[in-house]
Image (cartoon, rainbow, N blue to C red; front, side):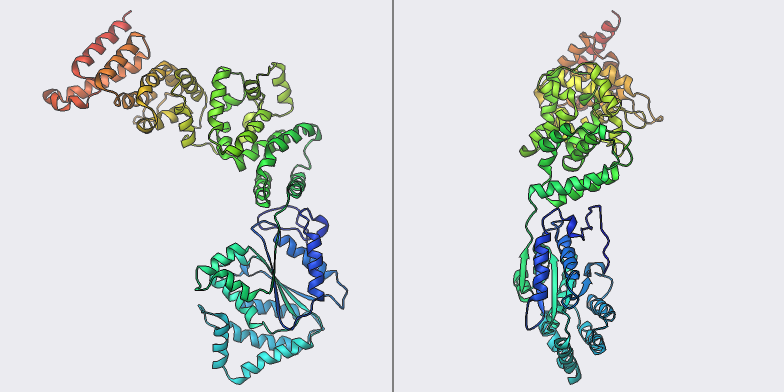
Length: 586
């Protein structure tokens, strides 16, 4: 039977040629194939190989089939491949199993015609067993008891014919762990019904833990005990070692990046990036599948415009550390361009982000960031950057080039809102008013579709965060910071979208009011008076004063019942208004 080589790894693909073996499964597969052909047993025999999802068990099964097909004609068994998962929920698995059995046997001239006919009749009997059922053996016995003696005789005739069959029948079954509980039991019913069928070997590969749990949910006996009644011999597929995983990953990456210009791949730099960072995240085949599948989709769209090493590195963050990937995407001026704000401020920002990671991930991620972004390396280890290096990065299509940076994120969706972690990071800077002020300015530079900025997004989310996230003793410095940068905030995207949309002036005013309400009235008044005297953000202050005047005028007749809800009392409001007019008239 011809087999097609599968070059690309995916969740549902596996290798078929042992020559391509990268996980060291071929030797075991060869010896298992030898045993299946040479072993003697009085009745049907069930062998299982257990392995977790994407551990390589399907590849192992393909290798066994390959070696069985290489046997001499007189020793080569008849192979019946069967995948019940493709039928689950759509057709009767028992009926389809026997259909597959008959289909293969009908093509074998050496198989007696009588065996095929008896199997067809026997399939009808087995398929008629009603579901759900309790214990498979009892269900079959009950059914046969209700049939006439001809049914029992038919089963015996099948057994007798199989004894005379010279060639061994090997049934290979994959993906059992994907089935529902009732489908698994329906499949295992076949094994029990054919237990006495000599010269039939079943080779199953599945995740034992999954199947045990699935069966246990619907049976009084444990799933482990249930399997022991079905399976005669089992093997545990070992996890691949680190060297094998690397070989497999590099082989798959080689397929994706085969056409990449060699001059763009610096082997020394790639070695540093891989072994100091990416290798940390490659712990099993599942990691390779996720990573390679992502690159298969994302690389073709930019393959002529990016540095392959940089692209592999940044995509590793997308897959294994999406929080940091999102932060990089949304904060380009922190990672590329001129060192602004100061080195110490950027170092604090970076450390705040890294602190959100698991302890074991912190150093590999930091290593990767320093390799990708020399600006960060210059900050963390105090190296010097020359202006001419920016031109070299552009020529090499590096992500650290301000011009090239956006190309690496073409297949990245921009978040409408800042994530919870980003909000926490920003609010974590309130202890240092200068850092907080600098970060707000950075947010004004981050343009979003529709003409707005991340600063506007942050201000709208800030109103819902202040009560829980900002300690009262930091509120004065936060308010001052908001007012200090209000000019940049107002100029960044103050065009409203229609008559009912709010400008930044309104949003800033609401944020400040929300913050001030956590302080007592006297403290609010003193803080507002201070910022007016300093001449800060008078448009915002005037907007706030006018809003307060409107509120108080509505309840003038009954102001004593509402005064406690006002941001400042009537007398303090009058003083603030007069002070603002005086400062404006200077």
